[in-house]
Image (cartoon, rainbow, N blue to C red; front, side, top):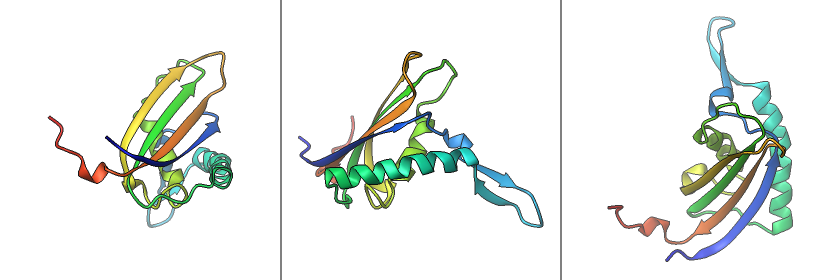
Length: 139
């Protein structure tokens, strides 16, 4: 049985940025370089204050051990999207805020819905877990 130490939840409004749309390569000059897209910068500018406000409101202390992340994503159109592509930006946004690094994520439980009558959003819950390092081999 896993013992829950603490948890935090927050909701980010708007469509999440897909992993494939976060960065671009520029070939200007002699050396190519990687840069964040404007879409990624806008999503970060929206999301980071929400996360930081919830940390203060909920009295969250940055996790130093393993965590479980629940991600519930809603879209309001039928465009094809891979659920796993939404994880990366959300996990990265929590680095040095919710936890030290996303390598502390031992479990991800995710769900995607499409509801044309609702605005898009991502609801995230992070739970600190105590026995992730003692998991038994999956049969």
